[in-house]
View 1 (spheres, rainbow, N blue to C red):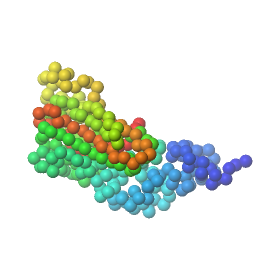
View 2 (cartoon, one colour; view 1 turned 30 degrees about the vertical axis):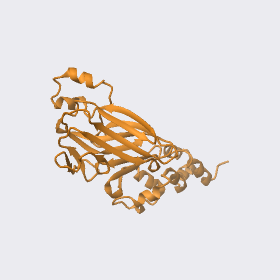
View 3 (cartoon, rainbow, N blue to C red; view 1 turned 30 degrees about the horizontal axis):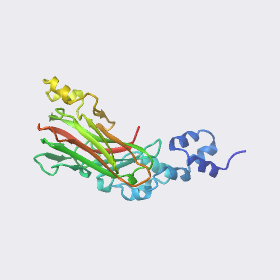
View 4 (cartoon, helix red, strand yellow; view 1 turned 135 degrees about the horizontal axis):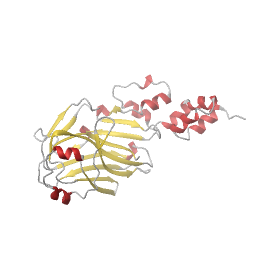
Length: 271
């Protein structure tokens, strides 16, 4: 005895996008049920209609089915006047955000002597910001947990590149922190990979480096978009709406730093 298609659709809506796609191979009934709007509306974020109103230069009506809309949103789309990028994870439907540099609080970023705002063709945003020279560096980002998926472990990353004129970025560790409510996690990070350190011609004092860098800090890794990322920390969303504060700082060294190019801070479900 076969289940009615609407029953199959209801059952599939309680699984995951990945499971729904796999089940479509079982039979024609499952295939039809797996295409149902009933299924894919459950996989879309509960606030997807509000998110669609925040899209930049995008028409959701060109995606007539909920499945088409789901897979469209699996690719980054600009929202909030182009200051943020949003997407949902293909396997789980969980939400991810990339906050642009303009959405961050960066100390003295409005001073042309210290920072330069520019357009880069490999960025999804209209502007990124490059560090000209500075000794005191603070970068802060924030997002509400209600904007994210509930009861989900998240990781936060600084999305960056290092310009050819960089110097002073590996002279001291950068401090990182992620705060949610009264819970705070602290860490340190390197913003340069080993090959970039060599380019900065600061390898002469290896003894000094060994003292300031314990050697286990996260280092940037390549992203598919051509940028690199450095992990800043992790947090859990839970059920309550709380503010998440994400920070990167280097304020203890007195040396000048330059060449850090910032696209933004990404918050995505933990791998």
